[in-house]
Length: 125
Image 1 (cartoon, rainbow, N blue to C red):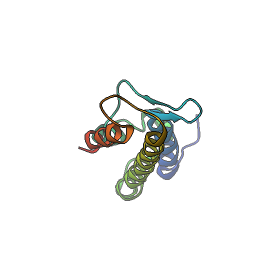
Image 2 (image 1 turned 45 degrees about the vertical axis):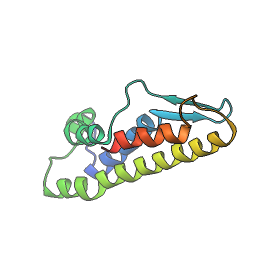
Image 3 (image 1 turned 60 degrees about the vertical axis):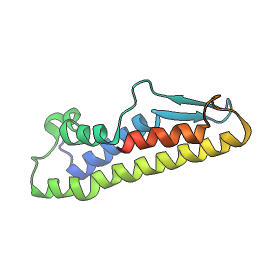
Image 4 (image 1 turned 30 degrees about the horizontal axis):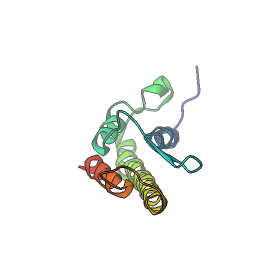
């Protein structure tokens, strides 16, 4: 039987997992000057719902029981960290879009900045 971990440890592990999956939803290859956008991007609401519903199933019996302290830690620490990470990712993509627009054409109808501004409006809605 594996050793139990704390909820704080589980949240940190899950945060790393979120970072990897989220940052792969939109990436920018600086060498090729190409954006890659997931064909099934998630919204902020879907991410939070997933975190609330099934984020910790992978840990199975290794986690302690959910209690008031775990609930407090989840709401006061873990969810805000997810939001902060998403804001950082959004900022990175928008900076890439702005730099891209100075040298390249994204689409005949819109700039990369316009496209990703609309993308994040839908994402946060």
